[in-house]
Image (cartoon, rainbow over all chains, first blue to last red; front, side):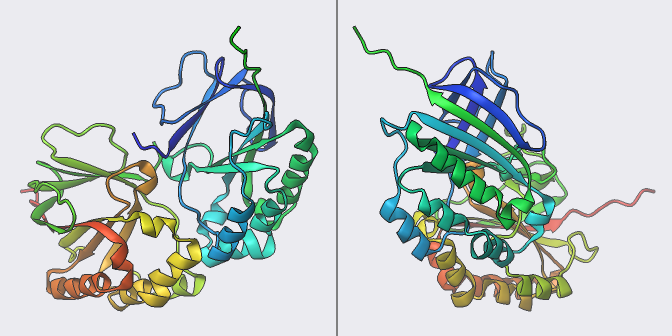
Amino acid sequence: MDARFYTFVGGETGLWQVEEVRSVRGDGLQTPRCLDLQNTHLATLPADAVWALRGAASHQRYTTRAEQTALAAVQAPLGRVESVCAALIPIRKNAAWWLLTQDERRAIFEERSSHTTIGLRYLPTIARKLYHSRDLGEPFDFLTWFEFAPEHRAAFDDLLGALRASEEWNYVEREVDVRLVQKEIMEPA
Amino acid sequence: MDARFYTFVGGETGLWQVEEVRSVRGDGLQTPRCLDLQNTHLATLPADAVWALRGAASHQRYTTRAEQTALAAVQAPLGRVESVCAALIPIRKNAAWWLLTQDERRAIFEERSSHTTIGLRYLPTIARKLYHSRDLGEPFDFLTWFEFAPEHRAAFDDLLGALRASEEWNYVEREVDVRLVQKEIMEPA
């Protein structure tokens, strides 16, 4: 199995407790009790799970070197102690998007929708990791994972609002918003 | 299963007879008798097969609209009656390539290596289809399939020579060249 493979499992176990599952566009997903992230591609749905979404951590598709340098200067790691809030946002883009050429997709993504520029504004507050699913034949094209501290919930909603209002989002045909809080970790007695 | 999923199976069956399997760079592949292309992702190696390579037909990663228009004007379909010669060229690029940003990869791919421009020169003589494998955790990143008539064997070798001499090919760490001829199809009596 490839180290870049991940499966998000909505079920009865996992480090994250599900607060809400909301359909933003198109079909939603069932609301599980917990979310588990496994560093493998599960071939079958585990017992007690209601859904499993697979993705691969991969190279960037649109970022330029200048943007990458700006991002790296302020980037935040996942797993910060204070980041007890998270969101998993699976997205599928429509056929029209995938028929565009690279220069057309890039122009919509950044020059006209400021995707990276918007994300930059919320760094290092909101940590983010993208998983690619489209070439795996999954129901979504991308799974984006976000982590932040509870006091930044409103900032996170602003970030999503700015992206959803962009031209790029005209090409989103399915989007689900899964909100999570970390389970309390019991200290050993 | 997704309609964009394919598996090339080197074994004892299939429409194509293997002429030669040659390692261009890095580890080679065993030489099977035949090659079969299946429109699915096989999970296990079929009996009698020596290797199976999986890929997904996907959107283009570097082509601009202007290039796409130029390509579409002269593009050739697969499956032409006279195209009884074929080649399967699996390639893996190195870690340095995948750490480059999109603008850097595009500049090497086209502005400095003329990948699309070189391919255009051989259209419609050489038909081509690309399959993406990298995010599937496969041993190769890309599988490229070519079809052409026997009188264009030399032209095909020229095409490969031009690509292999380009700056882009400095990033290729594994390449195998599988040459094939179509099996004679028996007419019903």
